[in-house]
Image (cartoon, rainbow, N blue to C red):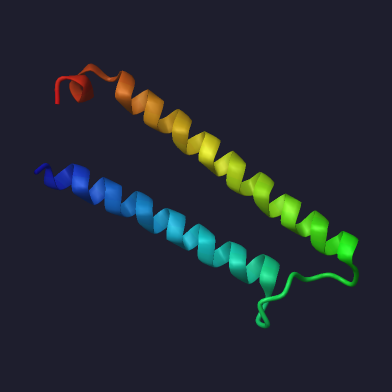
Length: 76
């Protein structure tokens, strides 16, 4: 029912979609394949992508925890 909260949630979803789009372009290229000359390079690229995704997830979780500590959010 809160229009401002709905906008914030929508903006957060857009951030995730933009990250997914960027990660696909960076790591998979036009053909949809991992870049790199050999299997090891492709594996390292995939692990790097997973590390970035985990870091962003951790940051988002931390930011949500900060917001939820605010008494204004607790009282709804």
